[in-house]
Image 1: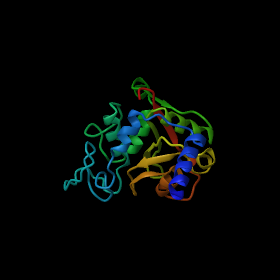
Image 2: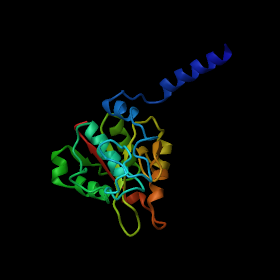
Image 3: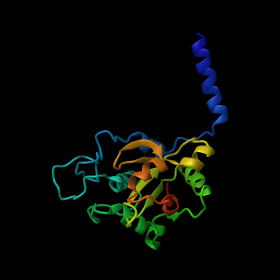
Image 4: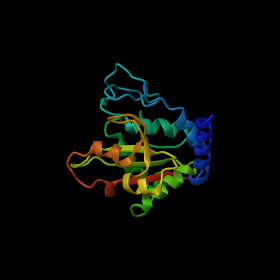
Length: 206
């Protein structure tokens, strides 16, 4: 009885002290994702489904971050560079480059132009409102290309400041929820401050 009472008090406190988020279409789509058997690293996969294929024509086995983003965009009826029009090879870099074009703006994409940590807060705020928010870094001599989706969350500002927003990603490691910093540090080729090189975009149509 005492345990049930403590549990009830904890639930009440969560609702009082944590900002509420409306359950959105984005929440629903992300809740249905299967990263255990779909978009699995070390397998060639189809971007349209995340299913593994024996075919090696995709030329990509290590990770499938851009395929996963493509899949989510299609679920939300949003446009982004995707196979078969675009090759999976270095697709994350192609997506980030395209997101910075007039064509992307016509399809509802806008860059979030703020300084850190306000950039992080704004990314979470927009995700909590149901917008699809992407964070990515292009392929360079210092980094591998990577792109991830910012999760809606009630993460406290202190942790957002230090660790960045939480993301859902298919990559070297698939994760339903991990901090931006934990995710993107896997894509450094050499020790650099990569966080000021990350680019954030959101779509106003969802």
